[in-house]
Amino acid sequence: MTKLVARLQTRVADDRGATMVEYALLVAFIALVALVGITILGTTLSSFFSSIAGQL
Image (cartoon, rainbow, N blue to C red; front, side, top):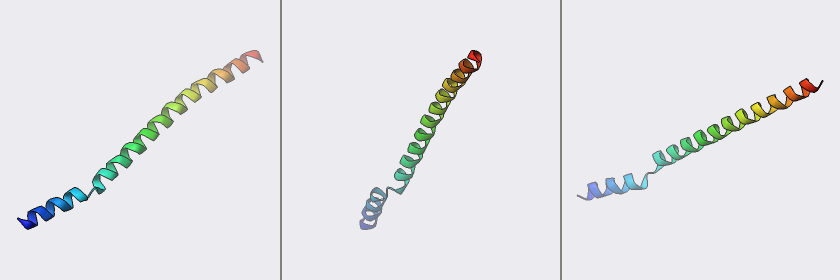
């Protein structure tokens, strides 16, 4: 019985897997925000340079 309690305590205290998942979610969120930002910025810059080219 003592071994069972000890195993349960070590499993509860071991949170490496949870930390890895949290970091993976954080990296995925940052990548998504960067992708959306680059897409919006690219569209805006394309419109800006097209208007300049039209004025020339």
